[in-house]
Length: 310
Image (tube, rainbow, N blue to C red):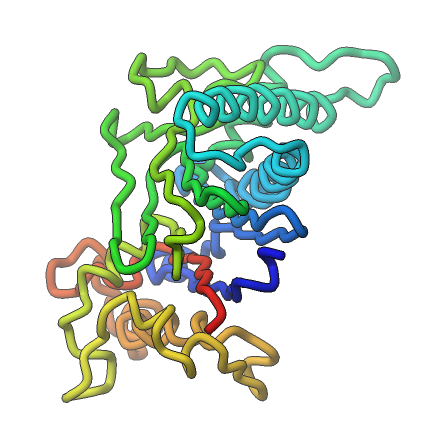
């Protein structure tokens, strides 16, 4: 069984930009397993709307469940691109249908039987439902990475950025397609369909990572000195699937029971966060756009790592 062949762990850290503004972590993640496959999904909420973490958490739960149902039905257990495109198109339709029903229920007026107005549905969408998604699907035959929006993934030691090639101020969000949304959608393909990022035979997969775009700053900073360390660099992202201690260690005590990867990610930006979020008494907090401070830890960072058991 696949779930017995792979081990997985996750990590997440709130960006210091969000801490400075008093905003919580707007990423979400989940992993589901069954005898037929493993499904991991991460979502990144749009920080320019009031409560994107709501949609992100609904998103990972809903999308992972729909993918798992498809896996149990035999979909995604192939490396054939045409079949996978059809499976993704069907998945996209089901995702939007689920969220249309959710939006209606949230926007439903108190009076029994009344239908929510177009404006009230748009308000729900604009408040909660804008988020990007990256998912990894591991079946006996194939390992597939799909996305709607930006992020990052790595298969074995090859790291790939999922770029937003459209309007930088309006990346692909599933909320664009929900019934009631009044925002116009660019005509580029990535705004209208789930994108297949990778198709690899599962027998060739030793490790797999999916992450939000905040991971890119960790990857770019691998040669920088780690916070509060004059000799040791941050290191390659590959240590997350190569370093036995970092992958498995659970730290208990003041952190409660938390993943070592989460604590590692927080430490990377702790020096920056401390200086920006907690400036000394009477000092003016520096702008988080200042070039004096690196981007590392600026945005929320969330990732899921799988690796094959030795």
